[in-house]
Image (cartoon, rainbow, N blue to C red; front, top):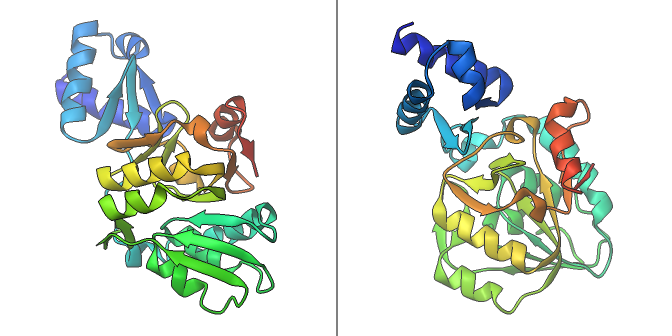
Length: 249
């Protein structure tokens, strides 16, 4: 079998199964361990998968601008946002970072909710402008326009003196083994810091994000308290998170 044929088969299996195991590939392709390692290394270098110990994982889609993501799966994002409202009650300090699903969450917060919202996302502050009883604190920093969030040293420093009841985490990629990951290193670092200041962490994630990885790890998946996702979803995508004692809503 030619190298290109092996590569196409590996990528086909990866798209269907979300991961491939090196020992399985040896038998499925009828090649040596060295050949499998070389194939995975070449595909990783080409940015088509991510090598991990014992095999490879499906890599997430390239970074897409915030405005382009607004109308992608909009109805699903609204459903997730409404499901997450059960985690909210009066008197909370809630940290909401960037993301189009998180904007929907902010928009659907009850108008009579008395709470404090801390965010590094200008679109979140805009979504809350008509909520009379929510105090909004916007964290400073350099605006990262792809995600419409503030990042950098100023943002990190602002988080040093904060403790929140609930952190609503914007998800780009999530994998039960690899963890919560992002294409941008600074964004991953800020999210890691946000997780550290939260009593509970909730991730709102559409099904396409539940078994993909990116370049920079913010935290292990076990850092999540809640995972809010779609109703009709394959059990093989959700079960690994239940095994990590994450409450799936």
